[in-house]
Picture 1: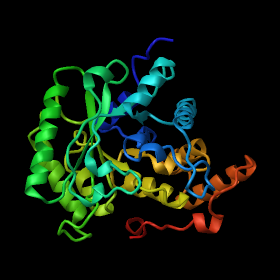
Picture 2: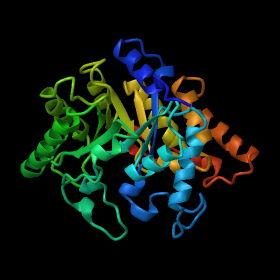
Picture 3: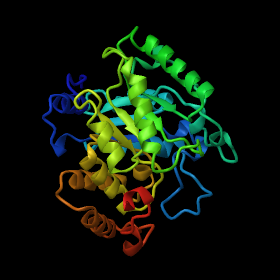
Picture 4: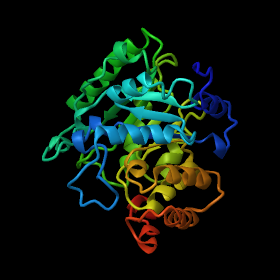
Length: 332
């Protein structure tokens, strides 16, 4: 099968940029790049009820990617370069409506090896993937930055991003920009961190031309006000997406897409929230229904548990516990 001329990602981005967004245009990415951060534990526990000491393998991880690609529920599959190459060799993504993407860089604050302390330090730029080698099977990738209110460290990160963009525009590659919240105290109170992130994103991209600009952003949800401010700063040009963070409850997952979309987010890039679910495909299907206002987050949790029961899949949490909102920013 030949490569499709238009991917759902491109169609949806076009409508969003033209001001014709509807909830059906919300973009969902399955982030299966955890091997670049967590290493051998990236694919997740051996099963949903595991004690956390036994983990799935790379082969399991690749199969989870194939499973998600077969249902047409997502628009982007984000992978490590090694995973993307293998799926490309298997002809899984060519001809699909899904856009393959790779993680272009792996900054030190995503190094989460067991026993490590890298996240206790300001993020340092680093890139494993070579764009010249990955362009054969993916022309889109994620570039990640984390600001820590440190002149030396943030300047180093900004210089690395500039060098990356210089390489990017020499070819036909595209990127989206991920900006994490810092993992430690940087002298800015919790209520203000989202606005600090907004200012640093706008400052960073103000000097970037359209040729080298990211297609969209991937940031943490720091509450309605911060998300709404950034989403409305330059609509049609600065498209904001959210990252998923830790697994949380199923209610957390549905609340996050619901609240963020209402605040102006147009993309969700979820890793652990999808990968660690008892039924990832069913979860994403219900995410779509929540975004389209066909179900409330609470109704979606109940529907999810009914689907698990019908499929004979044991749920990790009871329905009562899974209906709880555990993320403080979502409670607010």
